[in-house]
Length: 350
Image (cartoon, one colour):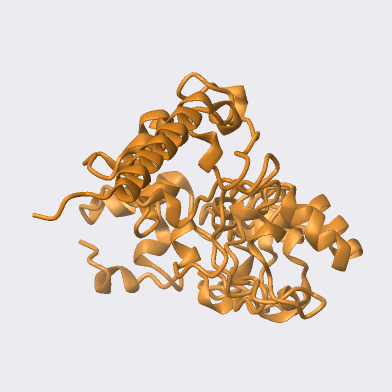
């Protein structure tokens, strides 16, 4: 076996001293001498202290707080989750941000450090994920009004991917100031209650709802019928009955009931399509006055009576029907829809 020369022994000794020096320097500096850059000084949300510190910058001399040895099975991701317990809880809930993101358990895939005290910790540009999973499609937000692609920071500013609700209004106001002012006045500031990024109201077909717009309704503004609406549920809850909007237009003061459409069309109030079920010339020449049968008119036309004409006194009507064995005779038109006596036999009289 060849013997070590004095040069070799000197080289080994020098190497040992160098390693010792590096080790002493690393220990004295807490590992900072190997740091590729300063840590972020950004504070946690709501001023919370995570892992006993207010920001990553407080760990500048404790690399081991985040970095683990190669043989440590826990790994760096586990160190992150030891401090960021809120994220650890989200990973098990698909309704949360981290629970929906693919590969969210690999913290460094989206979060970077050592970029300086003011460095951005979260970078998602270029990541392949479906934004619709977060409840808002980017279908209508591909390019800005100037034609440039939307970067994430246009909506998620401040180095955080939290979305401030006022961002919709502040951004759209720059391009559409008059429209946004009117829109806020009519519908309020909670944009995402109705808008989910696909412009579903931009080319909205009202015929797909339970109330198709015809006649003069086509020219009515949305806010004319959808009053005090502040969310999508409010749009869906809009009443479809005529009197909900036209109560003040009712010249009959409710006398004909609430279904205006039974007589009137949607083009004009003068467009009347009314067919009286009972012949208006019954018992006399020409049409009878409404008050002959509707004795509560004009206050109400919903009630009627056959008493007062011919032999139709309460006593005569009661006696004749009891003679025929008929006890329920108060709704005359149920058996005599056109006023003829013989109709009673066809409608189950007797």
